[in-house]
Image 1 (cartoon, rainbow, N blue to C red):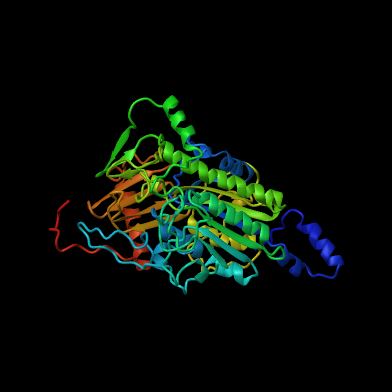
Image 2 (cartoon, rainbow, N blue to C red):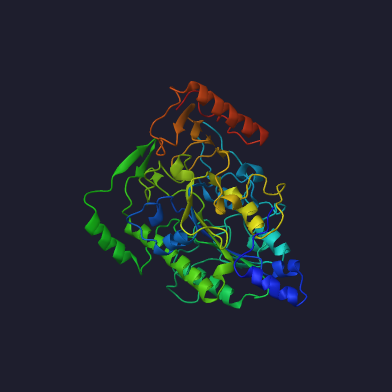
Length: 483
């Protein structure tokens, strides 16, 4: 592993060498900081630099222009808690036994509910714990959703917890007075995202300047309840009136309906609130002269909420469906990484990467040894960040054996190169797509490509067996063969 030298660090090492300070001590003092923005339910196409024309994200776009944008980045699950666990541990949701949002959907159908953990086990080692052990200050703000008290951020390696608890939606809503047990409102009408941003900026201003830091800001936006950001919603209402004609188009998706157009002003204003926050924090990094030694990551925990029994609040087109589904719209996420001295401004990667990759990537950027026994399902992306050619295409797996409010029923999927297979257990069927020619997954090739279908199905099942994945069991109350 090669130690990365950030701008200014070489001169810093030379000066300290003259003062008798070892290069190891100096490197530890100047290890890069990390700021990680995790947005809740933000779709791949919700950001302007990923194609949205209705939503407006100039600050996120600027971040992409200053770093690397990943076009084929995936979450380890189409719902929140499992992906959050995968980011923190570098381990697949199946491996940590958190495969559904906590506490999960209790619905059944042809199959019984698959029971998984209601928290991230304390014996799992998080990236926060590793960095803290190496002298990092660790700050958490926002949505946690990985267990109740006793399993909160401060139990998993974070020095500070602002607003994180067992809830997936903002307790009491986005405007004060809210009922968040770990964040007391300062005044009525206070907006949650603005408050989390203020707390994050205060940390940057008051931190111990002798130590590197990991700031992990997990927005509750843009999760339901869809609540307009009052400072921006009028703008999007006017924009919608000038832009669109007729009713919002819808797309039938199995037993659900997907939104066929981004035209929800309330939702757009929530996206704008996140963008404003990102801009304020990035500006603060520059003001404090931290930007040249701070890695910034931007990601979402699953696809945008597009499909429900009625249309969801956003559209992920040209990708199919959204949150809760194993189609691309449910698991592909916007991802941006800016690592000064490593990434080239405005670079783009087409490599398939996944949320488990953040853990080893952060270790290598911090010049810390990789720990594959911990981040067992992640790969360091530093070579990609440096602009090297993408490695040989990897195989990615998803296992979501649960029922979900999006009308998803139990299933699993595999991406192997450009090929992707999805199993639908409820309907006893598989679908096969070639993402290179059909990223919108419209042309099912399972019948015309039987050899490839069998190959991928067997590969997926072998992985499930190797991982001891919990498989859905038949519901005795539903007669066999019922659809």
